Length: 253
Ligand SMILES: *Cc1c(COP(=O)(O)O)cnc(C)c1O
Image (cartoon, rainbow, N blue to C red; front, side, top):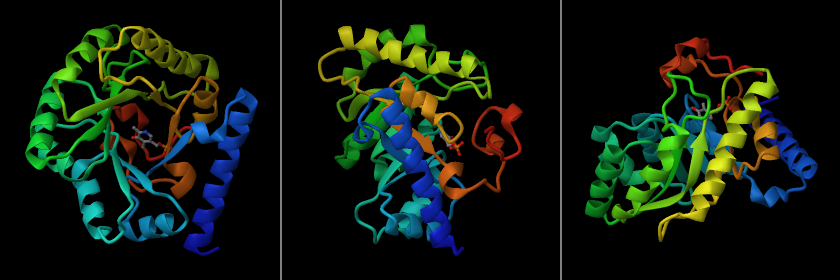
């Protein structure tokens, strides 16, 4: 199979699994957004992905994403979604091209992004990243910190808050993974009851190649799928995550 046919086959398989998971959960597949995670995937393969209809690319690192966005600047309808931890000194790059940022977990970053967005006359959809697994190595706010954090966000008028994002525990044991997704959903329900004016709490970005069916069962509105679409990555995930236990570039199935 050539590269385009392989990509098409992978994508078809993922969409079939998403549809099946939605069906099993009594949900409409239109309620689940597929975010293609494109870290380590080069611009040439992203062109193929675009030709197959993918329009939203999730990237962990700002520089990597910015370089690809420049290579693909001739494709007008792409949305770049940043899903990795952002350092405040990179906010100005993110503000230039990103349409969405899913890893907001500090007021310093909110402040830096908002200031840069104001300068550029842009706005950004944001999700608050929550550490639902309790692992010290993961970024994100503890669930208990989120309500107070969210109450501060209306101060940053260029940030359009849409909901929550999490990375579940990496495990084959669904009995340990599922509670992470349940925690995120329950937190959203609580936040919806007293969300400040202008703060939306609709999005739940949760589930990756190895666990998205479970996430859909628990209410995911966005699933972030990398290896399931593009195959295994050449670079170990420790280059992208602060979690060296997951090094090796292989995503647990
Ligand atoms: C890499 C990554 C994914 C996708 O992981 P796969 O296992 O390749 O599907 C999803 N979310 C985040 C935050 C990531 O860094």
